[in-house]
Structure formats: C-alpha cells, structure tokens
Image (cartoon, rainbow, N blue to C red; front, side, top):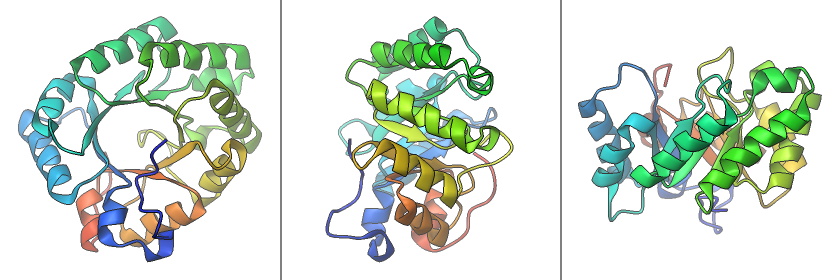
Length: 236
C-alpha cells in the first residue's frame, strides 16, 4: 500500500508536493466531456497528484494521456449505488484494468450491509478483489448511510480480504468524509491498510485534518484549489 506521502513529513507539516501526492484528482460527473477529462489529466500531471479518478468510459483516454508519468489512472465500479450484481461489477473492473486503469474503487452493497447480510457483502468484495488481481482495490463504505458498528464490520471484512484501501464516500450520497469516520476506519484496519477520505474535501485545512485523522489518500475534485491554498466548489 502506497500512502502517497513522504515519510519525512508529518501531516501538519506536509509541503505542497507531499500533499499533492496523496490526492486522487477526481471527475465523476455525468456531464464530463473529453475536454474536461483532458484538463483533469493535465492538472494532475502539473501538480503530480497520485491519480486521476474518472468513470470507466474515460479510462482509455486518461491512461493514454498519463502514460509514462507517475500519475495513476483510477476508476470506479458498481458506482455510485453498490447495487450491481457482483459478477457485473467484477467484469467492469476487469475491463477497466484492461483499458489502462491502475486502481479500482468499488462501492460495497449498502443495502446488504444495512440488513446485516455480511456474507453477501464479503462475497461482493471478494468477487471484485479477485477480478482486480494485483491491481489495488479500494472499497467505498458510503459511511453516511451506515452506523458506527456497520462501518466497523465493513472495515473488518475489507481488512480480512486484504484489499488496498477502505474509502469513506462516493460523494453522491447524503454526506462525505468526516474526521470521526476516518479515525474509526483507521482504528479498525490498523496501520498498514490504506484509508481514503473522499467527499467534501475542498480546502487545504480540511485535507490536512483528514490526513492527521489517519487518511493516506484523499479523493477530491478540488485538488488544484487544495494545493494552491484556495477553496474548491461543491461536487465531483
């Protein structure tokens, strides 16, 4: 697992380059066009973000534009509801990897988690994880919809299945990342698994606070504003 930060920097003293290296520069809006994705990639290259995160339609374009750089190409599957057949989500992941994706973010089955059907939740995660093979998998919990106990159980499953990251939010539900959720997730998964905070991170102070709480990756549409000292607008 790559935390994307220089070990010589603690979160509150991160320089801009180290902060940028924790950011998945994100554009997941339905109305995103080719020119928007190209701009996203160019911004990521300029600021040396960890990855760009785009819908799978745009993976071939993004992967080609980022080729030969240190910036990865992340995509989302089973997104944003986590209500697809596990085999379909696994196939989406497999196809995205074939198209050039270097990281996969999936949404767990929120409805099954709420119902306490943890065997089904585990099956869904394991199915997609198997399809990813060596490609890092992040599992989005959609924390705003779960109780603390449900968040803990989901994190335990992710930890036991050996995924690369647990992630707070899609950015498309009723809430985003909170300090409390990041702390809880870090407590459960331990020191080595990645924790990605996403949703509502629009300025440097919030980004640093998430890292101090235990996040090692940040999902942000406001990456440029964050590293430039500004405040980004709402939405992915």
